[in-house]
Length: 96
Image (cartoon, rainbow, N blue to C red):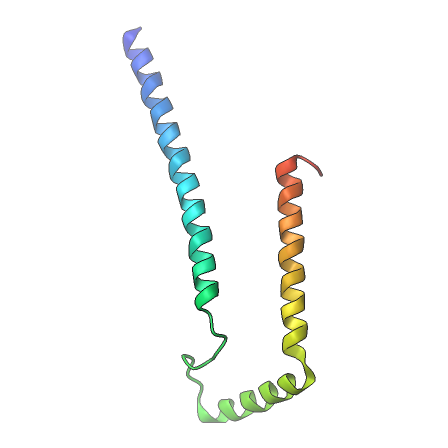
């Protein structure tokens, strides 16, 4: 009887440590994501492209910059973030 109570106490402690580990990982992931977003410059300096592809990339990039596509992409990214946040709030609130 005493060994069963001890087993239950050990399992409860393992569950609590597991939950703390899960919450800690989520918090660390959020801070890591925002930290990388703040340090993101948007440049492609660290990518290597062979010369034949680099010319084509520069032409496409120049055209998209002239058309204002970057602004549209940023607006769409913010819209997707807002929709995701709304969906998470609905799920957390128990709505369908």
